[in-house]
Image (tube, rainbow, N blue to C red; front, side, top):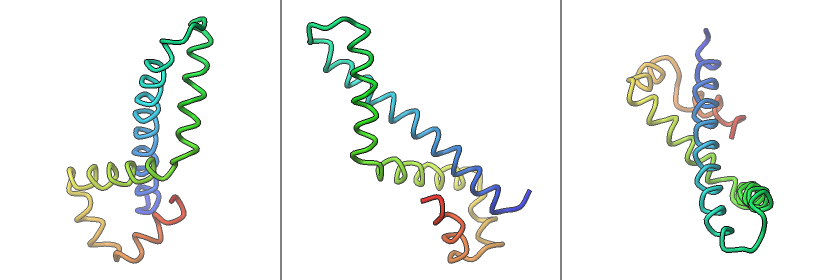
Length: 101
């Protein structure tokens, strides 16, 4: 496996993890906020789902900041960042990550 593909795969995994966790938080807090309404529960679930996606469209940058942080923490925890720095310059590393961001 080539190094850029490995880096992109790791970043996409951290992006999926951050997306799922952020969506879960937004959905739960939206669900708690909507439970006071006098609506059927299916309507509350649908409304909470829409509110969660609306928050993603308002502030999508938080998702990439969190996923990039998780990506770096994941690489540091397994000492892969040191190995990557040996093979790739920092400028090249940013060129690999830049199309994703």
